[in-house]
Amino acid sequence: MEPRLVVLSRGPELYSTRRLVRESEDIGLAVRVIDPLTLTLVVEQDGGKILHGGWPVECEAILPRIGYSITRRGVAVVRQFEQKGVIVVNPSEAILNSRDKLVACQMMVNHKVPVPITAHVGAWEDTGRSVNRVGGCPCVVKSTEGTHGSGVFLVRSEQQARQLVHQMLERGMRPLVQEYIQESHGEDIRAFVVGNEVVASMRRKAHGSEFRSNFHLGGSVKNIELTKKQTEIAIRASKTLGLNMAGVDMLLSERGPLVLEVNSSPGLEGIEKATGVNVARKVAEFVKSDLERRAKEKENSSNNSIV
Ligand SMILES: Nc1ncnc2c1ncn2[C@@H]1O[C@H](COP(=O)(O)OP(=O)(O)O)[C@@H](O)[C@H]1O
Ligand SMILES: [Mg+2]
Image (cartoon, rainbow, N blue to C red; front, side, top):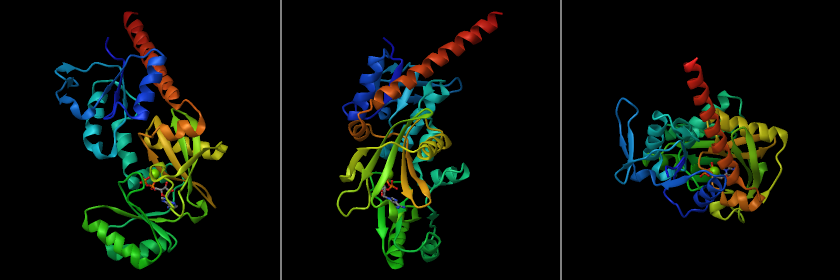
């Protein structure tokens, strides 16, 4: 049987991939997991072809789960599916925008989504002024592209900030200097958005004296109800970047919730375990309703052409 849905993932055994497959099958979708790096893309005028193991890949929808380390190649695969007219849960452009913390911040500011004050530093000599602009020390220095908290540092002096910025620039990284939201006390909020809805939300707390609350750094998670304002901001952030499935991270500051980043392949394990919500089912249902909507549109347009 042709799969209706292809999950693009390098790890069929990963918790999130397994859950998405399981719940999609449970609601009657034929699903297949394909490693995006094993696909052959034939680029030509009529939308091209996508081959896997010697055969063309035919499907109606794809669910991209593109890891950070394969962003460029993974996004090219997603783009090819788009050009073939396949339903794509998170479009290539949206994945790219969300992967770059500077681009994401610019887009959100433009759409009135509140974010921490952030400076993109192009020369280490500008570090001092940048630190002042974001409210002085302590402040946060981070790389524009990064995940799991690995390129994120809390700095206590201007000199330390200068050193970090210098090192990052030397390594070809693009450093950001960001306002430190001290009052969030090593906690942040993850809202899981599917379509126009926050389907689950949790509070993440950093481990010990750590200030980064990432689950991968041993942070603990707990179910919470979002306020109306937090919910609105999370949905607006996800829409602004063009994502239909997103993990929106917010810090609670004295001036209200601030969006820190928006993840286009949010993990399911932490949030399902913390909240008890069947998040994978919500994603599967979203895909199914999109497939049904597309089928209706096709039916209508063929009826119209008969008339
Ligand atoms: N400006 C900030 N103020 C306070 N805490 C921050 C700030 N930036 C990052 N953090 C903490 O560090 C964690 C990781 O930062 P983030 O920008 O999300 O990087 P990554 O993409 O690596 O997860 C956040 O979840 C948050 O707990
Ligand atoms: Mg993060």
